[in-house]
Length: 369
Image (cartoon, rainbow, N blue to C red; front, top):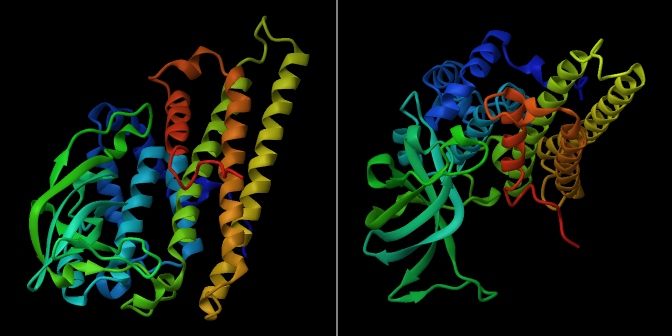
């Protein structure tokens, strides 16, 4: 792999400036700022993994991860929204071709959704009748379509897999088919607008159903052969990494401003610098291990050796290790940041709130033995 750069190197500096300068306004609005969205559309970042034939960038996983990390470094809510929505747009590789052609004809295509099986899909002639409600659909206000998982029911009976578990499939809904609840009330990641959505007795044709498995991919691009679990873990992890790197850089600015202050001796300043250096080294080491694991797994995917590879287990392990290293580094520095870090109007406070909210995602929480 090429040398690992600072996250700021992967996003145009002028885009970073605009995204960061409007992040406070976005938080007050409760959704991404129009100027942030304008940049996302101009850069086509919602389509990181979509093939060029459907208007996407068709990036490799390592390339896309650096962009997502760079966006999270610029602003956590922007990075998270691009990550979750581009991750949902990745479903293009599994959708019925006719449906995908319609959905992705929109230049501002953005899929939002939920992985939880929050609905029931009853089999009816020619398709399904669906009722359900799903939480945490990041980017709901500007989504052009929604995806959701449903338990399948036929003749009043829930269908079962061989192991006795319920059969679950994914479905795609158009924006005018869903009702959005403005119920995203969190400490951080406010501008992600990760609201709930609902459908009631919605009848859809059978081609709205899809399955997210390598064997069911309808497109040949290698990205659709990459395991979904590790894809999700890796893309979420780089958001935490980008935010942690930004927090450390803000701490460096804050600590430097204490030079010459009467309440801080040279020994105290040296101690602060040592803590900062330790945190940055921990982040660098964890990032390096993570990206190395991702690159190795991606090469396995390109060569057709993806199935059952232990390399993907290593991606999971290094993803969790990096996420925890980020939280530990941030929490080790926070007590020395003063009241500026507790002021909800400051960037350093927003980064702290964002990273601690994002870390509550089920794929980022510490593994329990």
